[in-house]
Image (cartoon, helix red, strand yellow):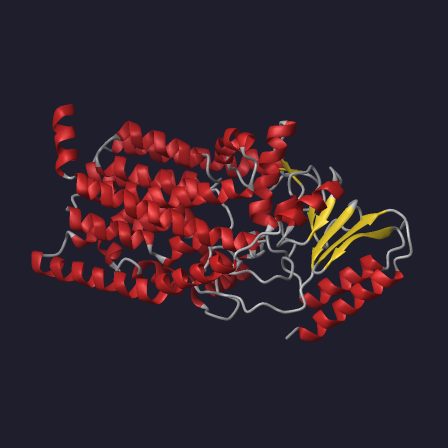
Length: 512
């Protein structure tokens, strides 16, 4: 059997080499673009910096504490149940750099395309169909957006889902269970996805005893993590169910009176506004990326239930955006479902659908991927880091607590106490700010330079308040970098302070 397997590999070695080349190209391109975003301060300390702080605390203090959400230190597992992040700890010990996180993310999304190729082959696709499926995955806007965005642990989930899809289609129950066990370590809601895999196993193979075991396991773990473990680690409730009106308040509407719940649900699913991407439009955009074919194999969508529900029910519309990362794990599931729907048509229709898929692939490439590639080239030419400045500021800070502007905070996140400015500015030992006088012309995939969920005007007000605080002094000022530390000034700062205030006035006048 092994000899036959080797012979098959040799016969199709050109296909495998080309497939690996495509995965490598995808990883390189997304990694370069991710680095340009990181080095030009488009990332956020609330994402990449949070993972960096958790890993640093785990390695140096054997804790999983973060200070970036709320005013007190919190256990990371009370915010997101993602033990999979700790898989990076050995590598991070050897090379503790933000680039490692982005590299891991790009690699995971790239190899998921390989897993999808074999999943489609196991599902009955020929080489051409499996190739189209993998390339449609790699250039899907939902996937590309996730691959070049700030680091998130769902990059691992995408790969584990790809492996689980292959194992399910190849009827490898033990391997599927192993992949699903790893999936449980990626985020708190993936127990529902495991139940979906169990349902799909029962529908596909009519082995309902095994299917019920998987479904029961998934639902039991979902309940255990969401309603016992995470509340115990976060003051009695899940972080995103707390009603505080902030960015993380996403599901508290479920605890409102029933008339308000129904009205909110209708708004989320049916009403399209500037602030809300309706659930119907979101589902249609997901289906459109696979030619609506999953509708002909609806049970194959079941494993996507966890992320679909999480995104549809969130009061934060960003979870339904094509420009963010939340839907990247859904795409491989939809593409396998699309192939199952595709097989239900006659040969002539299938041939037409395949050519339509290739046409759609070309359209996506021309309208999304090529502009992205040109953007990568332009940004790479201008790419430069300010590592010397970062190193100098870190030397000034030592291990002090810091309140940092959110788009630069990840460069200073390897410390016990870090807060997103202006939070924590009243108690931190230092504040690090990156002031710019020219508002950027941002691409859709970039974040604004103003801090997380605060207007530019309020931001400048907080900076001025800090400058006039008699207990703080200016430690470093080199446009646009500003470091203010607690303590009395060692010399007269009036001239420097006047220069900074004039600079802030220029920024304010330039605001739209």
